[in-house]
Image (cartoon, rainbow, N blue to C red; front, side, top):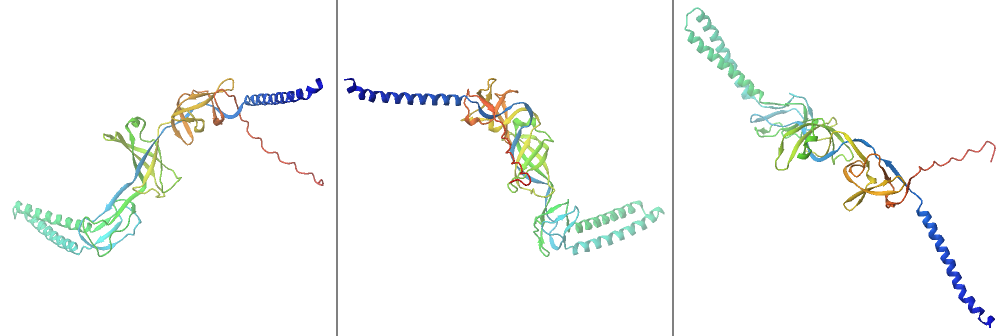
Length: 366
């Protein structure tokens, strides 16, 4: 009877043994996983300390020449000579255009002759008046005639001067708009003249930031024409009035422009640096953004981490100012935040050891 039921007992006991063995393996694996989860996660940390920092205000500005004018003539006349080319650098007072002045020259000759005759009569009558041979009133009349003739001479010379268009200041000329033989009037444009050795850039700053803007503040600007290049300047003046429509004040910055890269009318991305101050600044990668909330991982004394909500300020060049939520001396996780959760322990990752160089073989050995 016992031998008859022995095979059935073995069949029932075998699955129980297998289940027990499997259960034991899973328990060991779970314990191993648990031990592995308790190992500190390698991260990069940093102790936050106050450092020098300055805010920036960003705005769009338009470049303007330090001096700019559209050259025109004072009179309507035929162009006799053009003494410049488009894009030429000219000096202050340099003659650019000469207009025909035959009639003005003739008028000058006539005025000078009239003045010479009036001067001779005045001298003759002065001698007679000194001898009391003529009335003093007659001498005064001749003096007035002489002075009027002298005024006509000066007027004739001024008319001739108006027929020469000169550069009012040193600068660069634009495209030439006239040619010899063309008739120009007082409204005709000859060319533009711009002094671009230094450039003005006007931009607007919100009224709320007015107290932190002053002459001498550092300013940088970028232009789409020169990607990656930064132009440096300073604030020269702040407008005395605030625009009631925009509640903003116009700020003028000056930029040296020795290589003439900046041109009038160019649109620039301007960044105004406020005065330097002490602030808590951390790398931007340390800030974890979840929706509208921002937080950092703070390392506690036992090596575990906790989430700390923060208020971030200005971000610049991969760094961000922490306005609220972090105090000086806090140790924060800078790199490796993606694999953290509150309560896990962390450790500073050791830098990778340099690869060892194979020792050179001794001479004569294989």
